[in-house]
Image (cartoon, rainbow, N blue to C red):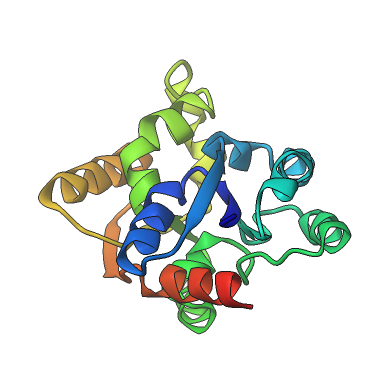
Length: 194
């Protein structure tokens, strides 16, 4: 029996690559990434899935940070006696908490993107916020932002174009920070070994 990882769908591809690179015997159970648009549902969905899969594995872990659950996810994990990624959100995981705090101190009005958000920006942000139907609401949602920072795990020319297009849609300047996958890899390795 291998290790089961209940994961945010936005991280599942990276976790699969980390598992292959490190010869980890994992089964990944991804939840829909769009749960982030309703963080109040994350804890319940993780709880449901853990009940479903825990008996199939020698150990389970959760590849979510707090992700806007305000501690509700931790209460679920305490019940199941499983651990999660550290931090408030995946930006902490990818960039490191100290780096993210520094970036926020420099400009509190920063909108962050990951590779997943760059790839899915139109669906995850524009459609989910209704900006495809009501582009006039852009200022209501984003008027307090001053820039976009793309925390890139694996930059490609295609992703650079997509990140630029996302920033253009928000009418904000784009800054690129290459953070790689080390932060996520280190945390996954810690989760499976503890």
